Length: 489
Image (cartoon, rainbow, N blue to C red):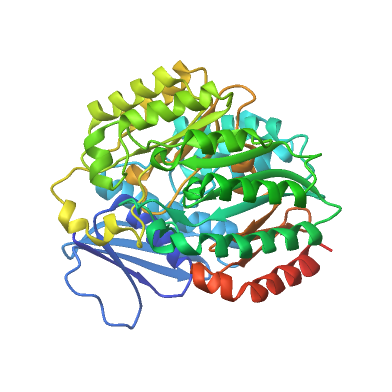
């Protein structure tokens, strides 16, 4: 269907319903509107929802004819969570009937499905009880239910020694990249535009780091993650300056993990790897995304497959024993055979962890903005391909340890992190499960305050624009200080 109209009689659960419709009809336009408003034109389908105090009525029209109708009874205002689940279940049954399809994650449209089994484990529930709840409440497939529960159990074991109440983690953002990849939706800036201002950016960043270290004195720093952008766009000396400043600002007594997302091989040099070895960096990423050269060229990665192999092997020679590699499934033009080739090449390198991303076409990406240009190129993902990635991880003696989902994700699948024993990315789990405060510094960085024993979360954002970040740093430090005083003291 080219367009689907979604009519409500009350302003309630609009986003939940819209997300489900888009999950079943990813290539169709979905338009929300309300009873009494003019109906959108040229709709091939219309989903009509009528909320009442004693129940909900649904009707799905295809070409003006009723394709599905159902009515349920409930006390609409008794329990909002139960009402929302009932609405989503009703919509799911209708769309499943009309399309003949099922979604791997059922009615779950949020980005953190493992939070549900994690919470239930903490309540003392058994795995079997959690599985039944996931299937009956959210219509999750047996495979995704098992995946979520497996990961929740592993996360819980990994985090058992983390002090949520008195600890925190630190994210350090380097917003520069050698070039902007076609699929990228992060706040990245081409290095060639900002090359002469990188030292100025580091001046501001180091000042913010110093501020955070003083404000969080007395708390335990558990994990550091230097991300971006591409942190290794910094020169070797700039990288040394940043890592030195972090070491001079914080105690590493309680540090469980120190990650530098080295990222693109065209930005990594032997000298930069050697600089990282001067500091207690425990984990790095070398991210090819694919091992097919034609795809690398298409998506704007200015490096070769050989560069990936060379840098990975040099990192090994320098003593790095915890290397992560990121892959994206669903890149333009990549079929099952090409993905199989990538996986076999990764197996030869045998990193300690592997992160599988299902391509998500976000609003800001150039790939989405110019999607018409790529209509003749396939965007392929399937349960079979995701099973191939799982088998690849198993071949390297890895198991899943964290999971998250994104909007508009290819095939309604997920992003999964796999790792060998004792090599899981602790920061990745902490930020996904929202168990601990994440202090974030740098342009576009988002601080996440977790408080009231994990029951409440508040965010404090830094501006994304690099120039604005440098000019308005005092304003952002003031925001952080207010957040710390309000939520953590």
